[in-house]
Length: 212
Image 1 (cartoon, rainbow, N blue to C red):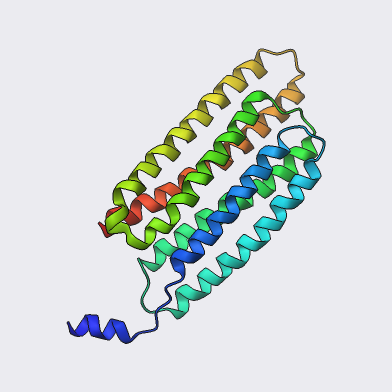
Image 2 (spheres, rainbow, N blue to C red):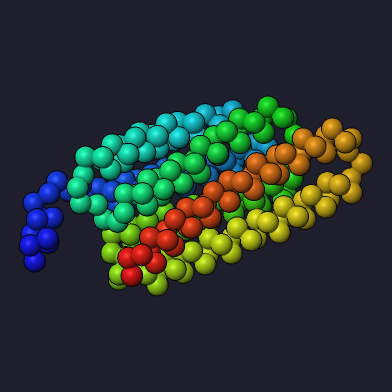
């Protein structure tokens, strides 16, 4: 009773879940722009600029979250987990920005498999966005968070299958070794975007295990 009363008097910041949700709401349109960049519509620079704009907004939320960790006594879950989660979210949009710029620089054509993997990124980030508010009531939302985890992992596995299929077609093609190497690098970068979504899920799974 005394500890609970003492904690109630300490500075608390109830906006951590809100910040996670805000950040995840930026990642979805970034993923949509990332997919549009892969469409070959001739507007790649426009899409890359939009990803960069969204990434800057996400960085502000990340900085706010890190500062709040240090000035808040009562947090919704462990400080290290808060830092892990906001970092994993930020890494996801950072990688979209970096990948978008690099694939433009490489100047390769986008294959159906690459586009399918980018579609996977949109679906995975959407699942994360929809689930993020549930972290405010983990005890009541554990099943839904678990279902989200399963779905994102299934999407990541689908992206892996697309990667395998794309690489098999690439190595069976008549492209020069140098071109094959460049295209393979693009595949790896696109796959890494979806992998970052799974990294976010790994953190959320750990939070759920400790809280339930």
